[in-house]
Structure formats: C-alpha cells, structure tokens
Amino acid sequence: MTLNKNMRVFIVDDYTTMLRILRNLLRQLDINNVEEANDGENAYHMMHKSPPDLIISDWNMAPVTGLELLRKVRADAKLKHIPFIMVTAESKTENVIIAKQAGVSNYIVKPFNAETLRAKIASVCGAMA
Amino acid sequence: MSAAMDVQPDKTSRLRDSHGFLDRVIGELRSVQSPQKDTLVGVLQYLSDHIRVTRSEIGALRGDQVNPQLFGNTADELEEIVSETARAANRIMDAAEAIETVATAVDPASAAALMEAVTNIYEASSFQDITGQRITKAVRALQSMEAKLASLMDAFGPPDGTDAPAPAEADGDARLLNGPQLEKNVSRQTDIDALFESLG
Image (tube, rainbow over all chains, first blue to last red; front, side, top):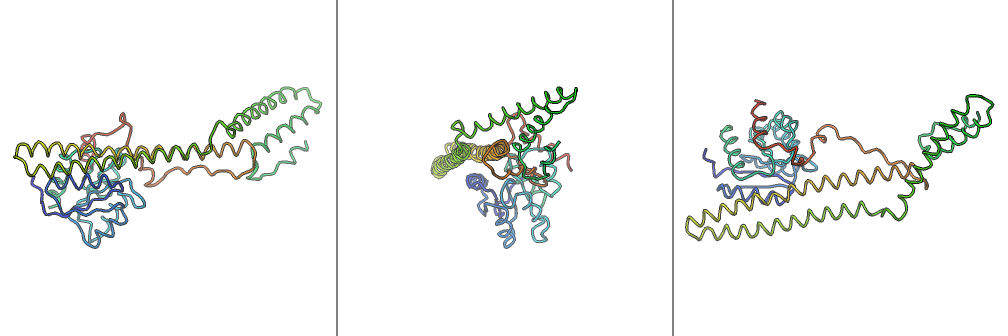
C-alpha cells in the first residue's frame, strides 16, 4: 500500500531520542510533515489547534499518558476520526485490550523496526481513508 | 493485671512500647500463683527475646554499615546512565544523519546500501528508550525499598519519628504502567498483532 507522503503526522514521546528516531524513520518513508510533543497534554492542545492526519504516541508519559491522550482524542469531535497508533514498551495483553477498547487504531511494541512502522501506518491510514 | 491498664489505643504507639508492655506483663505473670503460668510465661518470654534480637539487628542498620545516602546516590547513578545513553544515542544519530546526507550524492546501489545501514542504526538507537524505561523502573523500586526500610527502622528503634505511610498500590490506569517486560515475558509484535486482530 502506498503511503500518502503529504500526510501530517503528530508524534508524541517523552524521550527526545525516540522522537528523533521516529522523525528520521518517517523521513525515510518520505513523510516530512511531522510535528512533535514530549507529553500528552501539550500534544492534545497542539493537535486540537491544528488536527494532524495521523497520531503516533508513546503510552508511558507524564502527566498525561498516551492512553489518556487517546481517550481525549476519541472524545473530541474535532479529532476522533484521526488514526492513532500506540508505540510502546507496554506489551501486556491487558494493555492491548484496554487500548483497543479506547479506540486505538493499531499497536506497535518497542523496540520496533522501520518495516513495522511503515506497515502499521499503511494499515491504519488505508483503513481510515 | 495493672499493666493492661497502661495500654492506650493510640495509633502512634510503637513496637517498642508494645515490647515494654509485653515485658511488664511477663513480670506480673511471674508473680501470679498459678500452675499454668509457666507455659504462658515461656511463650511470652520467647516472643520478647525474639523482638529484642530483631530490634537489635534493625538498629544496627542505623550504624555505619548503611550509608543513609546509599539509595539516593544509587538512584542518581542510574539516572545518570539514562542521560549518558541519551547523549550517546544522539551522537550515533548525528553520524547516521550525516551518512544519510552523503548517500544522496553517491551511485544508487551505494546509496541503497548506505540507507539500509542508516535505517538499522535508527532502529537500534531505540535501545536508549528501552533501557531508560527499565532504569526508571529500577529507580522506583529503590525508592520503594528506601521508604520501607525507613519505616521498619522507625518502628523498631529510637529515635522517635513518624510512621512512613505504606506505598499506595497502583490502581486504575496507573496499574497499566509497567514499562518494558523482561525478555522471558515480552510479547512479540506478531503476538500483539494476533491479539489485536482477535479483538475485532
């Protein structure tokens, strides 16, 4: 599946290293329109002002976790349609179930590779198109 | 027994107060004329001796064997590891980004090989995120142990202090924040995909 190179992607992680990795891997997919935030609270305010086409978020952040961000996004009429991929080291079955119930579009376990990232983006963006 | 009258239902009473009370009870029991008292005195004396030894051992933790800064210093050391690995990961990515730039100026076959190598470097750089989360878990465990040890030392011996509150058990969403799992417990992406699909 071909990715839309012009999509606006919002990445959220409290580790700046991970934000840089995601940004670099997205660039290799020719996706250069990328915004970022270090926590869920800032991310929500930023994306509410200017909704992206895709959200890629870590789970384990403070003060607003990725799960809370997901719930806020899904409860927001302006944002609820946006594909949301959780990229996290939280790999317990319970986590995946709760994220799914909260409306996550797909789930990537850290550490991940570039192909997994590409495939999941293609999957959710295709599914949401 | 008059000793029983000395006990107050005070939340701040300490183990040492209870120990003193126990010794007083034993003393008073010894003066009671009863054929059954020896067994009871023997059991209570055993308990009292056991408490005394335990208090002595816990009290020794206040001595030179345990540096009160041990936990804090160890936590600082661990957090420094997180910072150092972040710096290292960023330097690695500086180099990878430089290689990526050079790759645009070489022949297509070389460029493809370089880009594949750079992608591998980016993927591998996520070690910093994973190790950082693991170390953060270790720091929290140390802080929990520090609080419990302080509470134990406070309960078992002088000087007076306040009881440390028991660490709150995580509930709600907080119970879901466990960070990276040990290798033996980790779920693979294929496991997650299968689970995700099964959820409909």
